[in-house]
Image 1 (spheres, protein in one colour):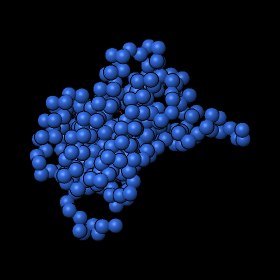
Image 2: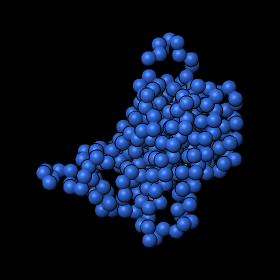
Image 3: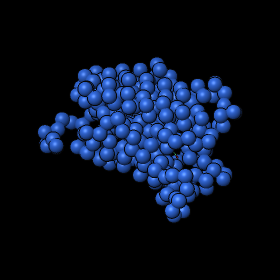
Image 4: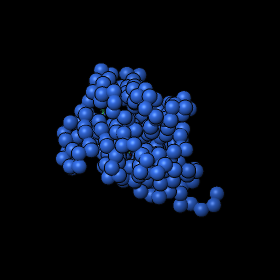
Length: 261
Ligand SMILES: NC(=O)c1ccc[n+]([C@@H]2O[C@H](COP(=O)([O-])OP(=O)(O)OC[C@H]3O[C@@H](n4cnc5c(N)ncnc54)[C@H](O)[C@@H]3O)[C@@H](O)[C@H]2O)c1
């Protein structure tokens, strides 16, 4: 393990979806551990609120729409060629509760545009820079609905399943450059997205599938981000999915409380 005294100054970690939920909790946890962070979101007011909380000077913010390629390129250019990027956490996504028979290709495209294509575009730009500067860590936030089939998640779940495989391919291609790529697949988390997606009887049905019987807090998911970002803790971890889901993805077909079977 490297002696912390020998370490070069830490590079910056980019976090998308930083104005809300898991992204916001990740920014706060990373800042708490002293990482310089660039918080990215299209919600300018949310980013301003985040900035006012952080007076130590290690947080910068960028208000862009990640689905607009030119805005992403301008952001990467604005970092300047000498700024070392240590990490990328891609948390921005859109969730939709749409049955397969009600799903239009247009709607599906819109969801894929952010959840898959925008994530890939930014990750590629970041990886190209990391490649020349000794590597880094990329963490893509997916979901249990990208690993297991859940009704109503035809577009959202399949977009996240694609991110799962994309991340594994990235992991093996980028390993020679010292770039690690992993995903975190949360179960239900108390955020704005969950409030919009998990409505009515779905909420109780979902919780009955979580052995721990509760939602996660965004801060619990951020702990996984800290682990995967820190080379002292996770230097040999790449191509993996870390499920932070209260046991949801491990559970079988019986109710978690039912014995035997
Ligand atoms: N909340 C859950 O229960 C849950 C469960 C599993 C996985 N996830 C995943 O966790 C991640 C974060 O979800 P959350 O619950 O924190 O969501 P959230 O809705 O609280 O936050 C998402 C953020 O992304 C930003 N964003 C959306 N579109 C954008 C765009 N085009 N450009 C820039 N920013 C944009 C929003 O402004 C918002 O701040 C997502 O990838 C989601 O799929 C969430």
